[in-house]
Amino acid sequence: MAIVITKEMGLTHREFYRTFPSVAGEWAWRVADDVVTLDHPSGPVTIYLEPERRRTIALISLPATTLRFEFATHDQAEVDAFIQRFDTRFRRGGG
Image 1 (cartoon, rainbow, N blue to C red):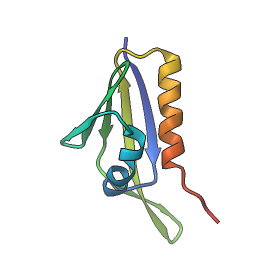
Image 2 (image 1 turned 30 degrees about the horizontal axis):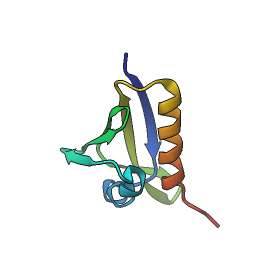
Image 3 (image 1 turned 180 degrees about the vertical axis):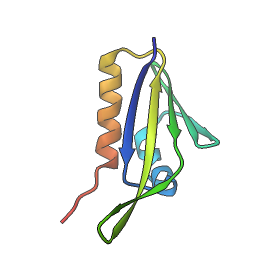
Image 4 (image 1 turned 30 degrees about the vertical axis):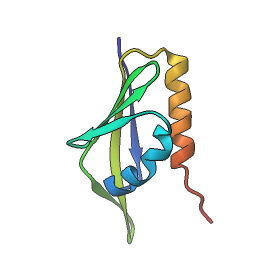
């Protein structure tokens, strides 16, 4: 049974595609219609990018994109390791 994780990210699709190569590293990946398929050693990871939208808080408007990750053949430890790798590379500093 596939493991599915959904994340709401404060970014545009362009920002996602600019950062994603650092997540993929040595693994091949391809894009078709805002669906990213990553050739992970334990099996494919499919990431669906939902349409971009804006999140408005008071006078501030921020980009938002929901991502859905599907892990068809991974166990929970592999999923956790991948999500940690993903989160680390997409982490932004503030200040």
